[in-house]
Amino acid sequence: AQSVTQPDIHITVSEGASLELRCNYSYGATPYLFWYVQSPGQGLQLLLKYFSGDTLVQGIKGFEAEFKRSQSSFNLRKPSVHWSDAAEYFCAVGAGQAGTALIFGKGTTLSVSS
Amino acid sequence: NAGVTQTPKFRILKIGQSMTLQCTQDMNHNYMYWYRQDPGMGLKLIYYSVGAGITDKGEVPNGYNVSRSTTEDFPLRLELAAPSQTSVYFCASSDWDRNNEQFFGPGTRLTVL
Image (cartoon, rainbow over all chains, first blue to last red; front, side, top):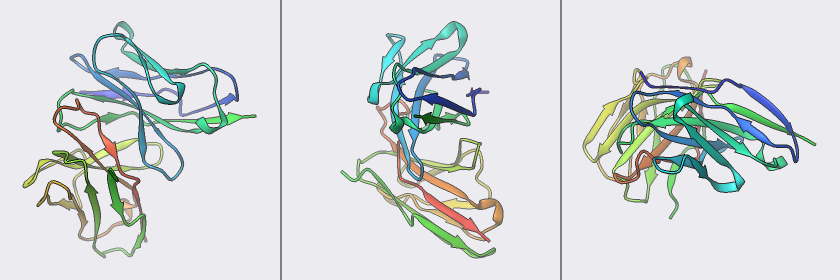
């Protein structure tokens, strides 16, 4: 069965420091992978997605993620965190077919300290 | 485009009451979804629709009903509200050529007391 694991429930990073949020997936075929961000009281906003091709994908707000098939991972990175990045981050996997649901991880809450 | 809109933003229900959560999208997307989000649990799919007149159950459909009479609207109905349905509900939509990329509404926070 498809599943997504985000091992870190909560991470605190100093402003200006680098960030890496981990995501591991379980899926039989080539997965379609997504990172969403949710600010408090808001809906989910797509940060980036991987369908095929280059395994390093760039997203909005300076985020990037790298797909590593051998490790079944799709970790999210940012070289320098801003206070406004404090939010909850969700990794999700899809079957690549429109009309099918996404499977979400449980999320990682990012706090940014000054 | 407004994208995906949901009403109401907040609602408190008493046990046994019923209500409908509204969801509308103006992107002409074929596919629409209802998820619920519980603290520390991510999002779980309740129901989805692949087009007007076609709906199907997701992972956690019990206690809910949906209909899809138009492309734009996908209301979620709670018939007999229970405390276990206290959650944040998100509606999403996607198009046939967007490879699962889903666009989310702002959510409805529901409390059942």
